[in-house]
Length: 196
Image 1: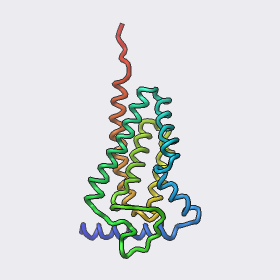
Image 2 (image 1 turned 90 degrees about the horizontal axis):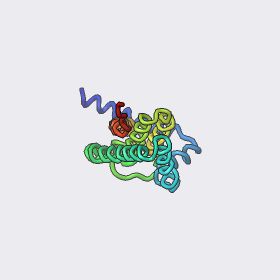
Image 3 (image 1 turned 135 degrees about the horizontal axis):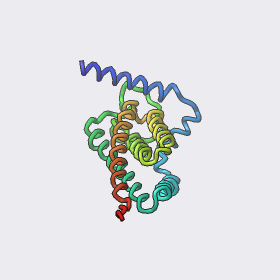
């Protein structure tokens, strides 16, 4: 029964992948999604976006707390990335769509390693969840960006939908955990009022 359920989910996963990768396509998407999927590799991301995020944290919470928030955010992404890569990806060893023989895949960006789970999804949803918990007004743009990156991995032919869904779940779990831990540290950093 369990094996049949897993087989059904895998076949459904492949069917949805074919729709998103090969049928629901457009020329603008062929340009947009390869760009958005590797945004973190661009000089713009490294030179502009990362300093902008640090500046935003510092501006909203002050220098000391802002840097603590940034370090916890970075740790959340790094730990979730490592857990996904070594705990799931190298354990499950699911082949990428392009390495799955019965599939005809439109590959639009380079890939390597195994498919399950998507580390792009893990990282982006870890960042989005952490940011949303610490700064709730940032939730919509953060999750929108995470969703676009996750979708881009399917559209570009390098991940199956379940890779993204499960990766998002892992990222949300770690992002929430580190955000709550960060909030506890921030509370301890508040100056104590001495009673008169």
